[in-house]
Each structure stands twice: as structure tokens, then as C-alpha cells.
Length: 70
Image (cartoon, rainbow, N blue to C red):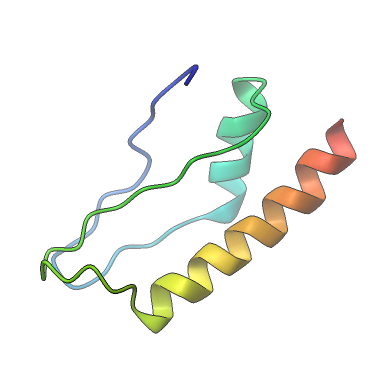
């Protein structure tokens, strides 16, 4: 791991995630890959549909942009 950034804060029921900002942080740190983590205030270990969708969109965006920058 070359860097850690806490990028977004939300409330107990939601937060906003900006794909562009996540990818920009990866580029800024000259990262080969990006690791994303978050906490689940409910304590559930199962990802919600919304989380799965955010993760899918982040991966798609990062794959396209980081490949284009390589």
C-alpha cells in the first residue's frame, strides 16, 4: 500500500461516492490498483444492492481510465 485516503463521509444510512475523485486519487498516487473499503453501520457482512452497484461502477470507471493512462 502506498497511500491511504479517507475520501467520503456520510450519515448512518447513506453517503455519496464520486467515481472521478476515487480514480483521480489513484492517478495522483501513481497507483497500479485501487483498494476500496467501507464500514457497514448495521453490522451486516452482506453487501447491499446499492454497494454492489457502486463497486461495479467504480471498477468500470477505474478500468477504463487507468488503462487509458498506462
